[in-house]
Amino acid sequence: MTDASPPLAGVVGWPIGHSRSPALHGHWLSRYGIDGHYVPLGIAPANFETAIRALPKLGFRGVNITTPYKQTVMSLADQISDRAALIGAANTLSFREGGGIYADNTDGHGFIENLRQNAPGWSARSGPCLVIGAGGAARAVICALMNAGAPEIRIANRTRQRADGLKDQYGARVTVVDWNRASDAMAGAMTIVNTTSLGMTGQPPLNLSFTAAHGDAVVTDIVYSPLITPFLAEAAANNLRTVDGLGMLLHQAAPGFRQWFGRDPEVDAELRRAVQAA
Ligand code: ATR
Image (cartoon, rainbow, N blue to C red):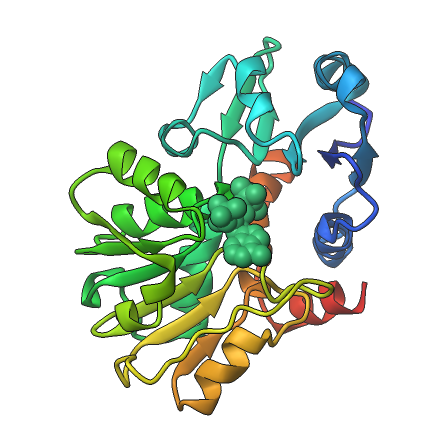
């Protein structure tokens, strides 16, 4: 890399065509007049390690990591943030001057900042949280809620064993609820979140009843396509406050942008519009 070359970053996944990250970072780059580039990098599993190790030599300052590499990339890191270690997965790599790879996970940060921005007054501390799902996204959400002071986190997952595994790992504040009791577990919960892929375009909906939910509960979904999932529509029909999942995607991107391009980017309506239009 020469000092004269513009900074590069990107997103690595397989496949990568669906990623909105290039539109997101591209918007910030042009908005702030930064002479840099953010590119989609579709890398097949057989080439993953070789490609990642070549990126710093090509002028990349770092990359986002998406499906299916968030867990496997951990074995390539020289340094891992505490939150990435706790989650067991990374979504943001930064390449150090000396060649080292630093792995971080900003998904939980994105989750919390989305709620703070779009549900004013919301706090993880205000009461029990109900997390639907026990996959990779759930891990990031649970760690973030614990870190933000949630007093209790109830997990309901179709495969109960996976929820039990999270309780074993994350400890006493976690409780496991049977999948068919998920609606009942809304009683008293102040934060209710879907972390499964149910409700995504082309997937069946997540059908839960909100009749037991507390009137002040905040309901959110990590699915952002469609923006209003059937789960969020049902919550809104029960007069509950809802926050869509797009803001989580926007906020998780900010720490990487700051690291690679040296500017604290704004997450606002203009960015939302640009990403939705992409
Ligand atoms: P991610 O990393 O995106 O969270 P994942 O690790 O494959 O992906 O987890 C997907 C989550 O969606 C899991 O909680 C999964 O439930 P299981 O552990 O029982 O598989 C949940 N999920 C996916 N399809 C589902 C369905 N049809 N019904 C209920 N839960 C479903």
